[in-house]
Length: 145
Image (cartoon, rainbow, N blue to C red; front, side):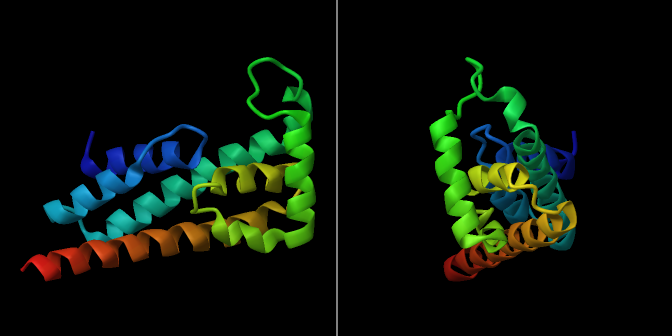
């Protein structure tokens, strides 16, 4: 698998409920310098955004899953999340890059956020995250050199 292929898989997995640190691979590929920074940001952003769609789809179908043993979210937790999302709205999707972002993207599905609005906000947030990461990594390089 190429570096960009691995980056796509890592970014996709990191956006789901799987604990996967895509930042380490991103920084490593950037520091390696063998991959175009534009391509790296693009592939990571697309993978991370598509991974968030998995959470969104689960949220859309959550009524089928709640109450099952394997589903990690209780009905009470889901109700609290729905109240929070209803209060703060779709703009919370701009925090989809943050540690609790996976839960926000799931609740967006539960709340039936229009897919195009979900895509717009999440893609912006995820891309901005990788742009900032690239700038920080470049700053570290400049600070060392």
